[in-house]
Image: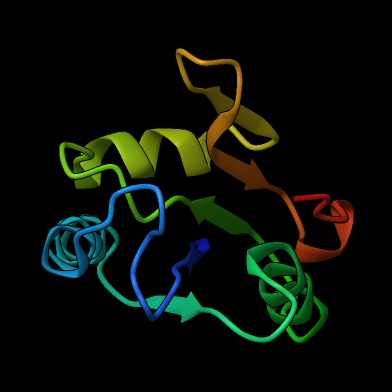
Length: 108
């Protein structure tokens, strides 16, 4: 079973400008993921994800916190398909499944 890592800006997503909305979306992602490691820290989300991955081993699925419609089934399918990436419509990444936490170095 994969460990879920959710990068999240504790002070709210600056592009949204609404801390309550950011927290509500995070709650939806957490509900779909079940047990998850929510990460933030100095240096931004990329640094926080890298620090989390350095402490983990085994399958990991990194899921952005702003995916309020994601379901547990979709996250299970993604994790089972590792290595796999879910592209966003704007060309960025919404989620990433890895066979092992050491397989990838975050660059965001």
